[in-house]
Length: 312
Length: 175
Image 1: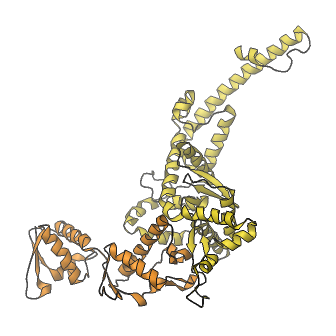
Image 2: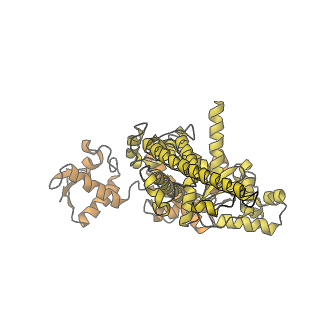
Image 3: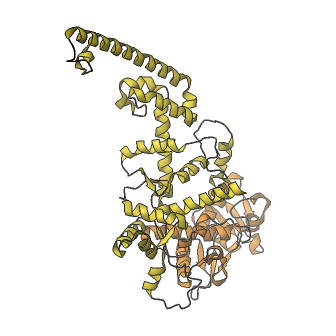
């Protein structure tokens, strides 16, 4: 009744009082039926969630559909139970909040572990690939037993890691029986962003990168990295200038930031084969130097590996 | 190159340029230390001859460490405790300690405990070549290195060494 009065619908002020009354009656009825529909929908969702708890946790397609079902209700089941209030009970038994929270923690761990080598930026497929290869001590046994064998590899972690990299034929392959879709990972990251630390996704060229440091990256930085993509992950200052037409200062500033943040490493030796004299000036060296982005380089490596597999 | 699984970073060209940014350089040095140690440990090579070592150059990517940088990397490696110059004046040969003497010492003592040698005796020979030491970190170890480890244990009061007829027959009593 309250809501009917608040509503400013079609019909108010039009026609005569008779019409108005009818219009209000209709609104009341439609509101009533809308409320009933919502109630039914709630019940259905609860039932669905409880019955399919396991699938919601394991299958990204099911999970995605479930979230879509919640959307028309304006419900975000990923909110913490405090924020949810009424909805807390409804979704309390589904574990969906837990699922994304746990995934977010895993993603953060992967990013933090890699930070010293890539400066805190890495491609989404790389994160996904690492997640799939991690031993999962605490995961219940799902599809395969492979999670048990990886616990003994902790001692030989270097060897095992290298072997895994070589054996990883398909980026999406389930090694430990658990699969995380890129959508899931993006959703988990969006939950992390509220915690500070700078977690976010950014677009570099055609790729999605995950940033895990608060460093402010502007379009100049993104563009330079995108330019390095077709070059295997490296670019020189003259190349940046040529392709962007920016002035040298602007190019250098952007490159310097990326270097200082550890997102780029410098390579002075790319002329080591052709360098005739050992007395080249420092300037000459700088000019010919290449800036390599570990995240882009890694990404291109995986791409090449993937293409090889397809052809071979 | 032989039977060693080179880490991914070995194919990353900037790995062969000493990085100017401190944090990045620290990561790079750590990777070099790891590479040097793992390479020599898995191939069971005890001595690194500087100008013969195949690690400084990666033909596949056309990169190599300069001579100056090679020494930087080696100095850093020695500081970490896993390497020692055989000739500190000229620095051409570096002894690689697959395990630091301190690590070996605790490994030996752990093994002694696990195999009921506390209160008992074994010889130096048995420690590096005995039947019971299969897979242990000190298996096949230099007697010299073993002794350093044993000296540490002695200092800690965990063993005492007594002379045998030959140095290999020197005995160790564990406490």
